[in-house]
Amino acid sequence: MNEGFKEGARLRVAVAGSMGYAGAGLVAMLGRHPEVELVQVASRSQAGQRHREVYPGSECDLTMVEEVNPAACDVVLAALPAGEVAIRTGAWLEQGAAVIDIGPDFRLADPRLYRQWYGVEHARPDLLAQAVLALPELEPGALTGASLMALPGCFSTAAILGCGPAVVEHLVEPEVLVDAKSGISGAGRQAGSSYLFPELDQTVLAYSVGGHRHRPEMELALTRLAGEACSVIFVPHLVPMTRGIVATCYLTLRPGVSLEDAQAAYRHWYAAAPFLRLGDQPASSKLTAGTNLCYLSLHQQGDRLIVCSVLDNLGRGASSQAVQVLNQRFGLTPTAGLEQAPRWP
Image (cartoon, rainbow, N blue to C red; front, side, top):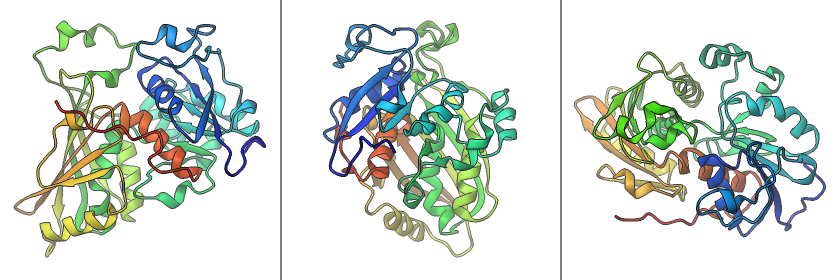
């Protein structure tokens, strides 16, 4: 950790990739965070411009740089495309900055899995063992002292939060089926023509049916939580809304386990979790828009436990979860910068 950070001082943070949806969300939240100082925002395409001049709604007066200077901050929060963070992380760490990666570069501990799902060799496989997959509610101790933290993907976050307590307590068989719907913003600001309004209005589309990149993340995390191999079948769907994820997770209850047993386990695991909401009925995705909240509801059909997990793919699935991890890792107020309330309608 750079010498500039002392107990009681404001944590100095930088955002790499500040012009994407997730990166701009980070800039907004960190700019109003009472316990940190946003010292740098980076964008190769808009370097030299003030952030507020080029990103709609931004209130950040900082002039964007091409690359962050890790020696001038305590933490780099990276919202860059696949492959970009791995190239830079070694230098960031060597110059004393901790790294929180919103992207996929450090989610998969095995470089062969990374090559399989992303089609390229990992730039820094030697750093993979150092990376911690950040699951604040389910593995809070893993963040203690961590210098390289990887956020699970948006779909992965919904599925892992939805299934975690059930697999940890061995209430279900180690096989999960996840059917999820996502808003169009998950494709990012550089999405191609297939994401244009005329292409997606009035339609719902299943995609990556043969295998989505978030599936191995789900399997690795749930396997670790369960202490036994856990397999996942996952099919995402694109729906014509801007943001939000609704993941319906289907699990098989072990003999003798009731819905009430599962509900008790979830209440136990999430009793002190400020961003988890347990309800009797599935939540509307609109309830999570712009927040770090995840709404869960548990149901039963026969021997199947059905968990509905709802969150904002750009918030809890990306930028606000990064701020939650930042708060927990550095002992800041857990809800600082994350006080956004649900909006209705």
